[in-house]
Image (cartoon, helix red, strand yellow):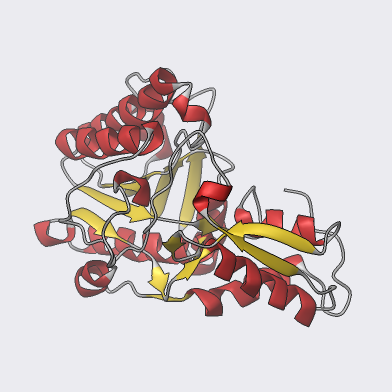
Length: 303
């Protein structure tokens, strides 16, 4: 199986390249200058040159707070770019898997979100990703939208790596405790994407496997819970003890509002595609192993 993915260096893109190699699949990464989502155009030939069996639309404008002051650019990339990728996929008659976000919801529901729940983004980022979902589904012939949340990896910029860096210079960190979600390893996401891609290639006429799906791990946590788990792993690998000061969202104001509940019900993707990600605590351990040398807690590798 040959996959063309938008973006060169994102967390999911990097994880997909790694996991695909282990699964015997090949990945071609496409980004600037040949594919610039900030200048949406006809990408048909760009993708044709990659000869993909499946296209993964992973690149996006993801600066949640900055999007509040750059709404036009965020919309251009997240909506216009997604639509352009979908049009190319349709022209080549290739299925497309598009990554979206929990930010399409307002977080007001007390239980995990299902795919049919009403969307109501709180900020520009979520609004542009929602328009992107809709534009892609309208333009593509065969499309899967995967909503994911709280992504981290042993590479790139993410919450886990930030916490470990802070552990090198502090003994207490203030972390929001009233936002719920599920920390999601990009490595697990890559495995799930590969399974969905295999299904799309194997059953091209099966319309039931298309549409919107939520893909997240088992279990849930607050950001403070996640931080405490990270620091417990840090100590277990030789690091110094860290304390978490559990605060509210009101104590840590940001330009963009965050959903209070980002938990995603992933039962549909388990039923349709056979994808069930491990519990987030289980997935955290191998990532910590890659970032911290046992009994030494040496500095993190560069991004």
